[in-house]
Image (cartoon, one colour):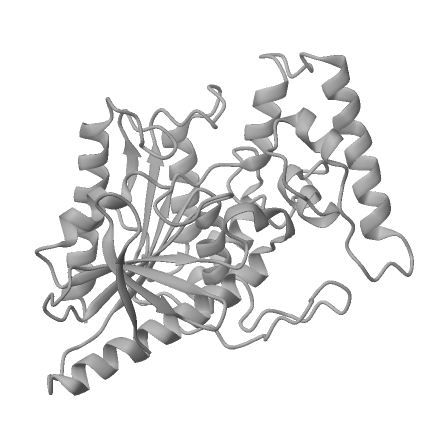
Length: 359
């Protein structure tokens, strides 16, 4: 249940928790700090790990005088393992973390002989937002995939008190924006060729009859599309690039601006039906996100997500704190983004206090 105190970065003092033998979470907490009953679990994006997201320090500082503690959770797909990852596996990992932290805080409360309510909120950054949305909308437990499951436990995911999507961008639109011009034409013939070759190869590997194993794609090709030189499976590539979208989007294709209302009803629109979110959904879109095409109307996109989320009688979109964060880049890490980080941290803090005071 416990862990050890240590220093991860220059100013990152906290406690490492072994959620399982292989999954860990870093709690931003000073040694001998008073008990905090409530927990915010942060999940990073592709390639993220401990201390890789700059604004976490700002959130930790904002939460210091509150009853909330911040945990940075390391998924099995963190760092350079994202190319092997799947949203279903990430959701399983998060479920185990929610269970662990709930039990950990319960034990602290019993040890101090206090009977405090304990609330848990999950927050995703970038692809971590896809994980959080997948956690909230997909069937519970995750349906069994007879070919690609690779040992998922298929546990029942526990309900959470709140959920935050930060920088929820489209991988499909981001990669196409990086390799095509304003008219949608590929800037480089070699890149275009690599893109088409990868799609054909990935589809052949994934959907061929009798194939019971995923296949790694050539680094020489994936790197031409701008991906970091890490192994990527055919299935994850198709999920991120989603070549048949918007008609047939991939599992990861949750936030593209051209998705149909039907698709949004199947994702955002299913949150209430799954009953895994007790309070409201907070969505924070970066105003200057470099991975979002300039053609995307961020405000209009948020309105569509809100409409899909709130189609039922009970309204669960957080109107008060959700929105576009002015001046914020994707990870809000620029030296000149202090005001944007302060805005982000203030919105998260205010939202968490609303969760804390809710019944």
